[in-house]
Image (cartoon, rainbow, N blue to C red; front, side, top):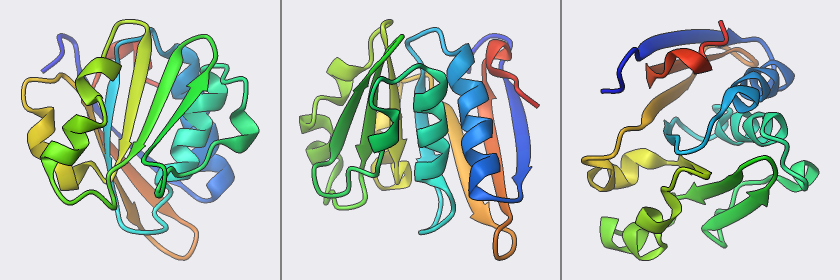
Length: 154
């Protein structure tokens, strides 16, 4: 666990609120952070990442989307962002073959959608665990564990 880490819960009433929450996180990123993001389809994982990318100054933030078929999207900005989608992966080995270990460096941020499919790859990696869930038609609950104090936005 990260020193000074905490848990955060945030209720979002809309996709815009989810993106704004992510933007506020992205503005505070220092580099070296890894996010393991879980949640069912439509729970807002990609909207959260769109916000993080915007807050981190991604140059191509309008084209942030889930890399379901390409598996990894990269966004340049103040930091180098890696957006990985593990939904279609069949094994942890496939995930590791994408270069996960290489992506984890002090000048980058790694965000993994469907992280629950490859949890074994996170052993020994200090990461922020994000669990998203539906709480109504538009309402989402975002639970974050192991959040460094400098990322506290609520």
